[in-house]
Length: 419
Image 1 (cartoon, rainbow, N blue to C red):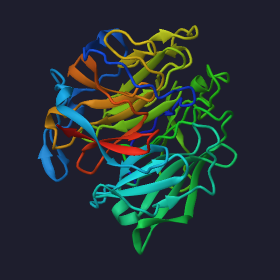
Image 2: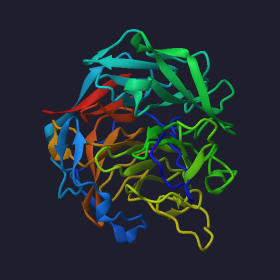
Image 3: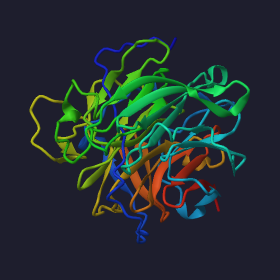
């Protein structure tokens, strides 16, 4: 049984990716200037100081999490080093949290692969090619999350589009006699959602600090959210859902609304804060934030708002939550342009402690990797860090908190290292 937690007013989050219209052009150099976003300019939920843990345990060591960052380290002293190649359209990177040190990479085309000691294991951990469709570039096997008790239960969860193009969230189990192979016949479907179009399927999965499984769903696709799913309380599309996986027959709950196509969300492992990258429509990409212990029921604005900018006239009396960071497709304000945000993770590793507390994210089209951090209790700062020239589809961390990204085009996994 998961820890008890009130679900009153809970809502949902969705993450997806606008891939089809994007190219792989190498980005032009741009000065690494910093843009600060005062909290007074955007409406964001505030966490009380008591909600930030004084100490946490990471990789067996007790540390004090870095919450604020005065300035970003010089990115010139760091590089993205290739770890493995030969992957096919990688879209997600996870670790099992079981002490094995393995990384698991999700391929959109239907495989989950294991990387052990920087070597790609030849046989896939799971092969779902017989039950998915990936005809549309935003369809396929899209997300993976390991049960917090995976070392004991062997349960993990995936998000994919089935043969009819509908979203499925299902549980699988590892084989009892082989930790590197899952049983493809162990599938138990937890959720099936009809998708009206082939794009904006979301796909992100993550267990929160409360022990519940969070599920990101896009608005159902096309453009402009023609059915108004993002704001429709009767639709699961355009939402962040939450599920108690330990209670059979329990339906999903909507935990946050007003998302267009979140393409990745993650919890800070040290603080429990939630970061949501939401792909924009025509002009703006955004990062949303919910502090640990923050309420459910938040409305991130789509399709009334694209970032902090009006998309459709909004009704009165609605408290929208605006992003803590955004960038324009055309670039500007010291930030590069792009077309589709790729959400990331907060760095909590030990090898590069100067990056502690920085949320890394990127853009699929431009290949830029950016950093987001809190300068103080009221100000966020965002800065372009690395012009990678790759098609960034996912970020992930290993069991020690070290950072990786996937290159959709070349099928490589890259690792952030000091030069």
